[in-house]
Amino acid sequence: MDKKEQLDSIVAGCIKNDRFCQEKLFKLYYGKLMVVCQRYTNDRDTAQDILQEGFMKIFDKITTFESSGSFEGWMRRIVTNTALDHLRKAKKFNFVEENEVNTKEEFVDYGDSLELDNSIELKAEFALEAIKQLSPAYQTVFNLYVMEEYSHKEIAQLLGISEGTSKSNLAKAKMNLQKIIVKKYSKIANE
Image (cartoon, rainbow, N blue to C red; front, side):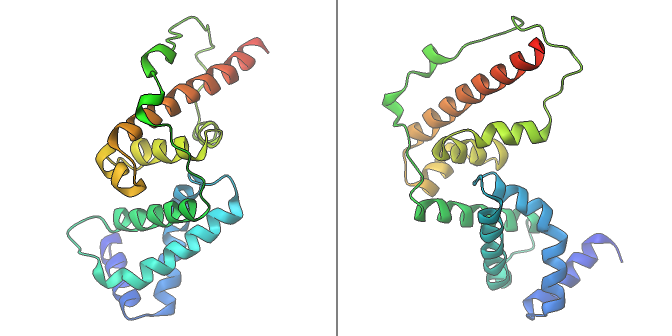
């Protein structure tokens, strides 16, 4: 039995509320979906709570999955929306309105001014650490746009903001990430 057939069998079992199949699905996607949850919160316990709630929604809505798309993508969307719901309830959003920031003036191109050893690589752990240093609003827009590949229009609809506010928060997130990365790498280069 190939992977697609195995997944189809697990999904069919989940549709029938088979606990064994639900456990298999959970174990199969726990790691990938936990990473999604961790992008939206700095607390591992909260990320696990979000993931648990997300899986409950997945099991509840599994009959609505249309097999024309990616099952993993469908689950990621549910988990992402669950994380956004959690952030909304916690009232962690403080968006910068589009007219409050002039992104062109604040962006600094460091170019080759930092002579860094070519062996230094930006690893996934460091990137996640840097993203977690952003404010919840910047972090959320950045994750939705860059990691989840949502459009600014979709982000605006999901978060109840304008497209311009989404673009502006993404620009500020990128500027702040640049500052974090430059600061971290200059420490490494000077060691």
